[in-house]
Amino acid sequence: MSGLYDVGSILVQNTPTAADDQPVGDPNYLVGLDLNGRRVVVVGGGTVAQRRLGLLIASGAEVHVISREATPAVEGMATSGQISLELRDYADGDLAEAWYAMACTSEPETNAAVVEEASRRRVFCVRADNARLGTAVTPATARYDGMSLGVLAGGQHRRSAAVRTAVLEALQSGVVTDDSAPAAPGVALIGGGPGDPDLITVRGRRLLARANLVVADRLAPPELLAELGPDVEVVDAAKIPYGRAMAQEAINTALIEGAKAGKFVVRLKGGDSYVFGRGFEELEACVAAGVPVTVVPGVTSAISVPALAGIPVTHRGVTHEFVVVSGHVAPDHPDSLVDWPALARLRGTIVLLMAVERIEKFAAALLEGGRAADTPVTVIQEGSLRTQRIVRADLSTAAERVRAEAIRPPAIIVIGPTAGFTAGSPDSESSAAVAH
Ligand SMILES: C[S@@+](CC[C@H](N)C(=O)[O-])C[C@H]1O[C@@H](n2cnc3c(N)ncnc32)[C@H](O)[C@@H]1O
Image (cartoon, rainbow, N blue to C red; front, side, top):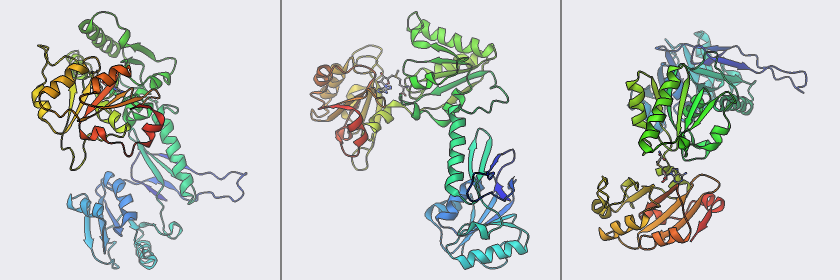
């Protein structure tokens, strides 16, 4: 028997084949344990126990840890009330009232004593240092969309972990579907990340795999669209005619009409939908029309594109703030809501989006407001994509360099001391054209 801390689990067991040199059939009986509100005693509070505690806590178990010492993470779980912790030696009798037990100390004799007590009490017990000597084993597990996956492979941990991961990835990417019930009609507003298809969230990818209709922005990761099945209708929002306002109306209508026609509609955007993405306007339109909306946050380009170029937007002792600013309108434009003199007085990082076209004006406004001319500036075009380009300059030369290198949107302009960092970006240096 083994413990999946959930009911309604998918259980995968290793079946020996005739081709196996040595049959390694897993003799265990996989089961889902309902541990909610039930006492589970874990003996040992080191890293071995720590790895197992998260799932036990998530299952609603009343977890009691007995250990001479505990890792800071285990202590933190006790402080926050997720588990109870007694810092002392294990003693016979500690498994009273337990439904399930785990022996996770580094001392074989203590683990043996825990298993022995558990067997006397008819309580199943995992023994971490030697699984065969316990009476239960923990499968390689994963959670996916309300399911638990568990794999046992006769003690071959790498094999069970590899199968678990492969099944999980197949589900996440839509290669394997679990759509016994079609997705309910509605809209999912998904942030697709900066462009690399690996940088969408797991939830975003899962919901995208279930879409009937996808309304995609220009900056939505193109490779994700290429993965969609032939039956999925894709509307390219960038190609919707009319002016800006009308195009937004048309997008809202497409989302609402699609959902009302019974479709599961994904609105796929670049980065995060709420960072200069008009996501909230779309949410409001759907809600006003009575269409349910799920919001899936995305990895915004404002942070991830600098990171992929080796630039942290904050760094201890260097910058204690970062500000993300739209360069959609010039500083002197009556519609501008940005306090450029205040920005110029900051010492931290300024991340400018949509600013390539007017970089001369933004640089001038910052210099005029007192930001030093030698403040480092890094400009990253098409971050995370194979076509990524990086230009390094300072505030006095940035505009000129951007023009000389013919940088075009989409690009991020990072201004501040961390923009001058070059260490720790081997990937970006080798995979990108870096113009100095
Ligand atoms: C309308 S805003 C949308 C931002 C998006 N919602 C986000 O959170 O990343 C578009 C701007 O984001 C920036 N951007 C988005 N993806 C980018 C990328 N892969 N590389 C560089 N800049 C990017 C550019 O400044 C671009 O003009």
